[in-house]
Image (tube, rainbow over the protein chains, first blue to last red):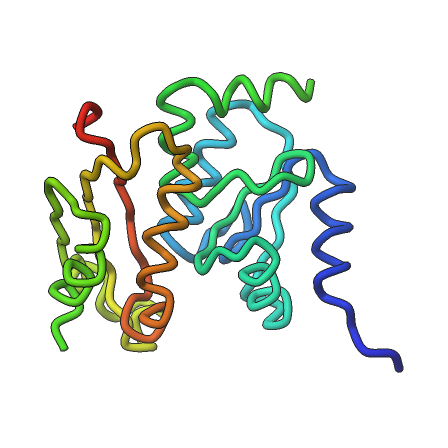
Length: 106
Length: 87
Protein backbone atom coordinates (compact mmCIF):
# COMPACT_ATOMS: atom_id res chain seq x y z
CA UNK A 1 0.00 0.00 0.00
CA UNK A 2 1.41 3.36 -0.93
CA UNK A 3 1.91 5.93 1.77
CA UNK A 4 -0.96 8.29 2.26
CA UNK A 5 -0.45 11.78 0.86
CA UNK A 6 -2.40 13.84 3.37
CA UNK A 7 -1.37 17.21 1.96
CA UNK A 8 -2.63 16.18 -1.49
CA UNK A 9 -5.89 14.92 0.02
CA UNK A 10 -6.42 18.24 1.78
CA UNK A 11 -5.56 20.18 -1.34
CA UNK A 12 -8.08 18.13 -3.33
CA UNK A 13 -10.76 18.64 -0.67
CA UNK A 14 -10.41 22.41 -0.53
CA UNK A 15 -10.14 22.89 -4.28
CA UNK A 16 -12.96 20.53 -5.26
CA UNK A 17 -15.47 22.05 -2.82
CA UNK A 18 -16.26 25.78 -2.83
CA UNK A 19 -16.56 26.04 0.95
CA UNK A 20 -14.90 23.64 3.38
CA UNK A 21 -14.81 23.84 7.16
CA UNK A 22 -12.31 21.64 8.99
CA UNK A 23 -13.78 21.26 12.44
CA UNK A 24 -14.14 19.12 15.53
CA UNK A 25 -17.33 17.13 15.21
CA UNK A 26 -19.97 17.63 12.53
CA UNK A 27 -22.22 20.50 11.54
CA UNK A 28 -25.06 18.77 13.42
CA UNK A 29 -22.92 17.84 16.42
CA UNK A 30 -19.97 20.19 16.86
CA UNK A 31 -17.58 18.94 19.55
CA UNK A 32 -16.01 22.30 20.35
CA UNK A 33 -17.40 25.76 20.99
CA UNK A 34 -15.23 27.38 18.34
CA UNK A 35 -16.28 24.85 15.72
CA UNK A 36 -19.91 25.36 16.73
CA UNK A 37 -19.52 29.12 16.30
CA UNK A 38 -17.96 28.66 12.86
CA UNK A 39 -20.85 26.44 11.72
CA UNK A 40 -23.37 28.95 13.00
CA UNK A 41 -21.74 31.80 11.09
CA UNK A 42 -21.85 29.81 7.85
CA UNK A 43 -25.49 28.94 8.47
CA UNK A 44 -26.25 32.60 9.14
CA UNK A 45 -24.84 33.30 5.68
CA UNK A 46 -27.06 30.59 4.12
CA UNK A 47 -23.85 29.04 2.83
CA UNK A 48 -23.58 25.61 1.26
CA UNK A 49 -20.53 24.02 2.84
CA UNK A 50 -18.91 20.70 3.53
CA UNK A 51 -17.27 19.86 6.82
CA UNK A 52 -14.36 17.59 7.66
CA UNK A 53 -14.34 16.16 11.16
CA UNK A 54 -10.70 16.15 12.22
CA UNK A 55 -11.49 14.09 15.31
CA UNK A 56 -12.17 11.12 13.04
CA UNK A 57 -8.81 11.33 11.30
CA UNK A 58 -5.60 12.06 13.20
CA UNK A 59 -3.58 12.42 9.97
CA UNK A 60 -5.91 15.13 8.73
CA UNK A 61 -6.00 16.73 12.17
CA UNK A 62 -2.25 17.29 12.08
CA UNK A 63 -2.06 17.69 8.31
CA UNK A 64 -4.48 20.59 8.15
CA UNK A 65 -2.37 22.52 10.65
CA UNK A 66 0.66 22.04 8.42
CA UNK A 67 -1.30 22.80 5.24
CA UNK A 68 -2.31 26.28 6.33
CA UNK A 69 0.59 26.76 8.75
CA UNK A 70 -2.11 27.52 11.28
CA UNK A 71 -2.13 25.79 14.66
CA UNK A 72 -5.81 25.70 15.52
CA UNK A 73 -9.12 24.27 14.36
CA UNK A 74 -11.68 25.21 12.99
CA UNK A 75 -10.27 26.35 9.66
CA UNK A 76 -12.36 27.78 6.82
CA UNK A 77 -11.45 27.50 3.14
CA UNK A 78 -13.27 29.25 0.30
CA UNK A 79 -12.33 28.20 -3.25
CA UNK A 80 -9.14 26.65 -1.96
CA UNK A 81 -8.05 29.74 -0.09
CA UNK A 82 -7.50 29.63 3.64
CA UNK A 83 -9.72 32.30 5.21
CA UNK A 84 -9.02 31.86 8.92
CA UNK A 85 -10.30 30.43 12.16
CA UNK A 86 -13.44 31.25 14.11
CA UNK A 87 -12.21 34.64 15.39
CA UNK A 88 -11.43 35.81 11.87
CA UNK A 89 -14.74 34.44 10.60
CA UNK A 90 -16.47 36.46 13.31
CA UNK A 91 -14.63 39.63 12.27
CA UNK A 92 -15.39 39.06 8.59
CA UNK A 93 -19.04 38.40 9.41
CA UNK A 94 -19.25 41.59 11.44
CA UNK A 95 -17.92 43.63 8.52
CA UNK A 96 -20.07 41.78 5.97
CA UNK A 97 -17.07 40.41 4.07
CA UNK A 98 -17.87 36.80 4.88
CA UNK A 99 -21.39 37.17 3.52
CA UNK A 100 -20.00 38.81 0.36
CA UNK A 101 -17.42 36.12 -0.27
CA UNK A 102 -20.01 33.37 0.21
CA UNK A 103 -22.68 35.14 -1.85
CA UNK A 104 -20.21 35.51 -4.71
CA UNK A 105 -20.17 31.71 -5.03
CA UNK A 106 -23.88 31.41 -5.70
CA UNK B 1 5.18 29.00 34.33
CA UNK B 2 2.08 31.16 34.38
CA UNK B 3 0.84 30.89 30.81
CA UNK B 4 -0.94 34.26 30.81
CA UNK B 5 2.27 36.00 31.86
CA UNK B 6 4.24 34.03 29.32
CA UNK B 7 1.85 35.10 26.54
CA UNK B 8 2.28 38.75 27.54
CA UNK B 9 6.04 38.36 27.71
CA UNK B 10 6.24 36.77 24.24
CA UNK B 11 4.07 39.44 22.66
CA UNK B 12 6.16 42.26 24.07
CA UNK B 13 8.12 42.27 20.79
CA UNK B 14 4.98 43.70 19.14
CA UNK B 15 5.41 46.75 21.39
CA UNK B 16 1.73 46.59 22.34
CA UNK B 17 -0.02 49.72 23.53
CA UNK B 18 -2.25 47.44 25.49
CA UNK B 19 -2.46 43.73 26.13
CA UNK B 20 -4.99 41.73 28.06
CA UNK B 21 -4.83 37.99 28.57
CA UNK B 22 -7.80 36.38 30.22
CA UNK B 23 -7.43 32.80 31.44
CA UNK B 24 -10.78 31.22 30.70
CA UNK B 25 -9.62 27.67 31.45
CA UNK B 26 -11.92 27.18 34.41
CA UNK B 27 -14.97 27.56 32.18
CA UNK B 28 -13.80 24.65 30.06
CA UNK B 29 -12.49 22.29 32.74
CA UNK B 30 -13.59 18.75 32.11
CA UNK B 31 -14.35 18.91 28.39
CA UNK B 32 -12.41 16.61 26.12
CA UNK B 33 -9.87 19.12 24.86
CA UNK B 34 -9.08 20.42 28.33
CA UNK B 35 -7.87 16.99 29.38
CA UNK B 36 -4.60 17.56 27.52
CA UNK B 37 -3.70 20.20 30.10
CA UNK B 38 -3.60 23.22 27.81
CA UNK B 39 -5.66 26.21 28.86
CA UNK B 40 -8.22 28.41 27.17
CA UNK B 41 -7.19 32.03 26.83
CA UNK B 42 -8.74 35.20 25.48
CA UNK B 43 -6.20 37.66 24.19
CA UNK B 44 -6.71 41.28 23.25
CA UNK B 45 -3.59 42.95 21.95
CA UNK B 46 -3.34 46.45 20.53
CA UNK B 47 -0.28 47.28 18.50
CA UNK B 48 0.71 49.73 15.79
CA UNK B 49 2.35 46.75 14.08
CA UNK B 50 -1.11 45.55 13.05
CA UNK B 51 -2.08 48.72 11.17
CA UNK B 52 -2.76 47.92 7.53
CA UNK B 53 -2.51 44.17 8.09
CA UNK B 54 -5.23 41.64 7.39
CA UNK B 55 -6.71 39.73 10.30
CA UNK B 56 -5.00 36.63 8.96
CA UNK B 57 -1.58 38.27 9.06
CA UNK B 58 -2.18 39.57 12.57
CA UNK B 59 -3.23 36.23 13.93
CA UNK B 60 -0.31 34.53 12.21
CA UNK B 61 2.14 36.81 13.99
CA UNK B 62 0.58 36.01 17.35
CA UNK B 63 0.59 32.28 16.64
CA UNK B 64 4.21 32.38 15.50
CA UNK B 65 5.30 33.98 18.75
CA UNK B 66 3.41 31.39 20.77
CA UNK B 67 4.02 28.39 18.50
CA UNK B 68 5.78 26.11 20.97
CA UNK B 69 3.08 26.68 23.63
CA UNK B 70 0.34 25.31 21.35
CA UNK B 71 -1.25 22.90 22.13
CA UNK B 72 0.62 21.73 25.26
CA UNK B 73 0.09 24.89 27.32
CA UNK B 74 -2.48 26.68 25.19
CA UNK B 75 -5.35 24.51 24.00
CA UNK B 76 -7.49 27.35 22.72
CA UNK B 77 -6.80 31.00 22.11
CA UNK B 78 -9.31 33.64 21.15
CA UNK B 79 -7.49 36.51 19.51
CA UNK B 80 -8.47 40.13 19.08
CA UNK B 81 -5.54 41.81 17.39
CA UNK B 82 -6.22 45.50 16.86
CA UNK B 83 -4.37 48.53 15.65
CA UNK B 84 -4.53 51.56 17.98
CA UNK B 85 -7.15 53.37 15.88
CA UNK B 86 -9.43 50.33 15.98
CA UNK B 87 -9.29 50.00 19.74
